Length: 474
Image (cartoon, rainbow, N blue to C red; front, side, top):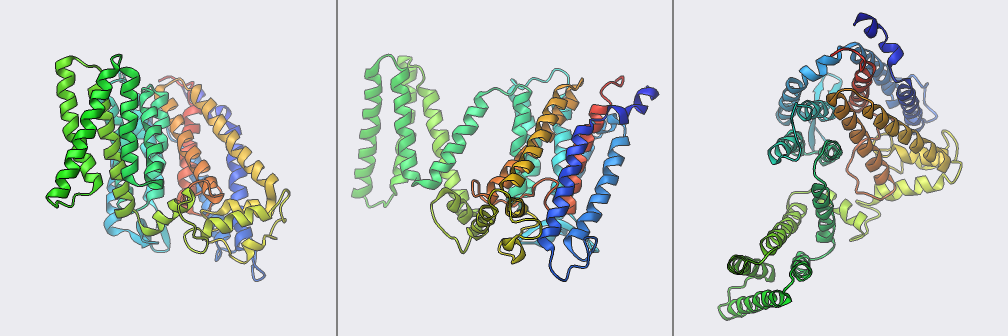
């Protein structure tokens, strides 16, 4: 056993470490470029962000070494206690945290700030791996699926309360882990349908979306029901019932909205359909009815959440991406300036320290959320392709290493690492070029910030230790 442990540094995947170091170096150099001006004293000046980032990088390397030498079994045995501790911290930050940009996401201790939601990502990955690696667990079982979703939902709810919508959305990426471990494909179809319905609800009036869903339900019924007469009877019942409710509403001046009339009509006709399907032994009716009810309920909940829970700037960012409104000087300003900066870089870029958009601070948050536009402006299309290629190599290598693990726990955690990094990579670059709404999440290893760099470092190096120790006896 001891000889195998001595070989950890031989067995470790140096290709992942190499890509990690290159990305961290590129991040530091580009943070320096963002902060650089004629009064800059030097690249090691800790009064600027690039100097502070260098300190975070050095400490991140120390953390990497610590997590490499910790026994692999520690991560499995303490996955649940660490998860509970992190949930306590996420609750505590709601009461004791420092409010920054309208969110209580940080603990401030002296001059040091700590964001627990960043570290909750890899700890949730460990807890999920511990649960899914339980002997005999089967994700075809509804109870096990619910328990898996609860593990993911707890940090999401607590982070939403801060509120930090961007960080909470990262946990949706861990669905990749569940599908790899046997979650039925129907859940992917449901998730895709919900995403489409979410967009349609924001683009069109919810009344029209509801009518479209009802029409779609009758279309499904027409395709599945061999006796087409039953379909026309069902449609007639729905139409007549709706007409009666509309007339009664006008006669008695109830002032019910069209949406409410449709919902009432749907409930009444649904009961009639269900009774008739039971009497005449009609197939598919109940399933289709439940689909319509669920879809319309989701539609109205999306409408409510969008207009009553999301902040105004979040609503505008989503509307700008969907093309519902144009606000180049307001909510769309960051993305508009980011696209100008990236486009102005051309093929080869303007050169290191020569980005005009960067130097004149046209893009807010350029060293954090919008760091990619600095790369696009100064290093051009070529620089962007190189950075994206490095991330792709890293992600593909992580997948390869995850699949060669000898224990289920290690493999599942490896897929958690892939999912979290993949989400951050795609969403961050997507929002800088206007493909997704701005939700404020960093580009791993590139964006400025100690908490995010440390969390991503720990995320990867725990997995590297697991892989290096995969030949040890269990």
